[in-house]
Image (cartoon, rainbow, N blue to C red):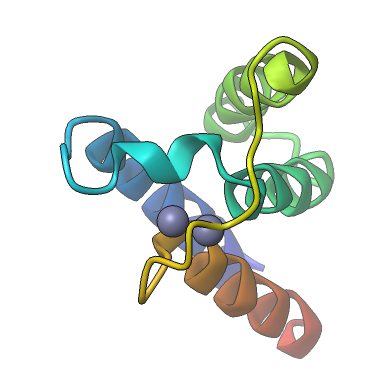
Length: 97
Ligand SMILES: [Zn+2]
Ligand SMILES: [Zn+2]
């Protein structure tokens, strides 16, 4: 349980770093990123602690913007960080418990 929590915090931090990275900023409008947000919110909703709740509200507000921003298909960045993290997250959430 704690394992996934740490992991979510970690991804969250990496998302913030991505926003400051000129090369990968574009990944924050690709559908991989919104897929990642979706899985993150699913996982965060299971947690009751303050940090998780705070992350959840930030993730939700980013996720809800998907109707306003122009989301494009993956630009084929290799690797596309959000896509990789989604894969890791799904793997982690399956192996817990
Ligand atoms: Zn990308
Ligand atoms: Zn992508």
